[in-house]
Image (cartoon, rainbow over all chains, first blue to last red; front, side, top):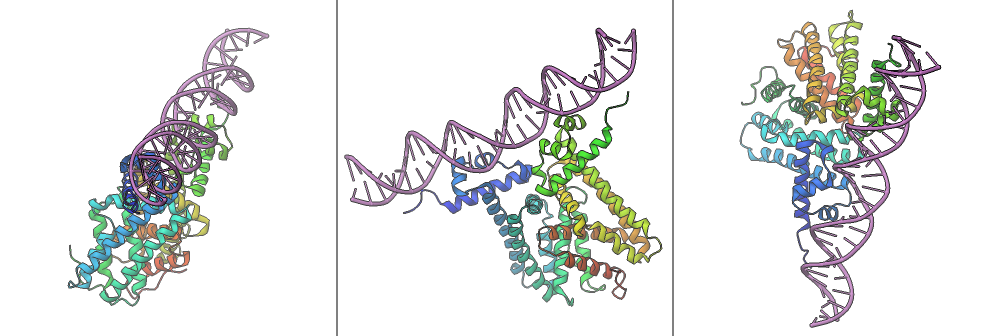
Length: 199
Length: 199
DNA sequence: TTCGTTCCGATGCAATCGCATCGAAAAAAC
DNA sequence: GTTTTTTCGATGCGATTGCATCGGAACGAA
């Protein structure tokens, strides 16, 4: 009893459309009709995939969350031989979503963050991703730096990256400035005499 | 030819209503009708005060921006005799919008931030407030710490505060955790041996 | 008073929203 | 081949949106 089309694949496709729309016009600019058009499916298809709009957004949130953490994790295991310090720099750079190519994801992330402030379900979804990232950072910092409290450093780093991302998005900070600030902060982590991460 | 009612006063009143609505349901939940109802004025009044909805939102953004920077500045000059370190701690604590009483402002701020990512006019408004805050922080840090680059520290601090605020809003971080991280970061500023700011 | 101008609140309107429903096409069962 | 069941795309519906328009109240000048 094979279904006519792969449902999961379609959900993925719709999630991508949602992301594209959020990137272009923000969360408020996302209507079911536009999503259907962008995903090149009928409105009925969208409604069958997701019972309600909120359910759709929630899935899309999980989708980008997965992509982001996946990429950070990939960066991590992808360069096991490098110095831990350099690895931290790379992972954070990836995570901060500063690069132009990830600007879209940053906008999407920020939209969800703002929406989550008044929507418990979205907040729960976001917390999952944040917990993952924080754990990843903590483990990374634990083996990379001699800091006595890697968890504290990871939490600080995560918040700093998030804040910088927002500042870059509204043009209050350039990508270069943000990266420099991030690297300077990291350099301060392994003692005032330590060498900064590459770049 | 005195106007029947004070226009500026009314604009203020409407801005407050906008803020209250954003706090409760986010930016998407703000309609002209709801604003009028909340501000206890007619819809026509809202329309005469602001030609368009965007103009209204822009004014509201400026309104909260003024409130926030004003409060931070007030904190600054209000305690000139204290140690600079303690002052920094207080100002940042105020700015981070962590306290429950300022949670509403934090939500509003975050909403505008997300909207600004896809709305140049709002972004410009936000940049003004950020520039003010950054200048304030920079001057404060310059005379408070012996750090060689107070501007860098100010920028980092601002981003960290913003990031933490977001994390608190979605429940990924408690207010206490965030304050502790903020203070720990500050403590690291004036040399690893320096005393932390008061609490 | 009477006229003319200005300001006010209320209502109208076209567009769009999320969601429910429907007939037809396809698949499965027999 | 026929019938039954499921899945599809499309359309309908009530509600809500931002904005435009309208009749009347409030004021100053004559």
